Image (cartoon, rainbow, N blue to C red):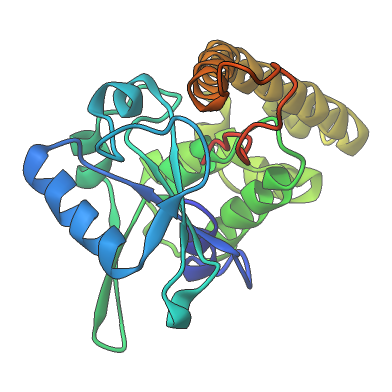
Length: 250
């Protein structure tokens, strides 16, 4: 659901971690715990719970972060989530997934559409990835492309030149898409398109910040409780807390 998915879609060359969207289910949790044990994976950030996966926290949107210690995967970070910002259920996302077979291995990826929405975050590094994911999809279009696919591309293209080309190529679909950047593209004004895209990006970044704000407050509370538990009675509050990681949206 993250950088590795972007690699498999051809929009990135490298990712340092593995982001997985998981089904919250007791049997699935047991399989996950076995896999994490086999990888010698240890929790590296709050929330730290026992057992090391908490259904309630996952469903509220928190991520659980692990670092692998087994020699062949030493240092690999695994981030587990069960909920996305847009509220899609796991079952909905699974129905829309993309399945790839590579050298006998099966990979289940978030659909391009879901991955693009998930990557529209407050982080600078995600926006070039969003642009590449949509551009690659647009440049691979054939003559039998469904209207739904065209609607997605016209709503999400982030390159002024390509957006202007797309509205000229598919004017009927473009006319049905409510997006200020589309109106500027229909007028052929590349500068106006770029301005509208920047405003749109700023709005999407603000939406992501608003989504994470209450979760970050909960993480601060988790950190405080962890410090309280790990601080001896005769120690000061200034003792260094255990290492923590900032939560990342997918």
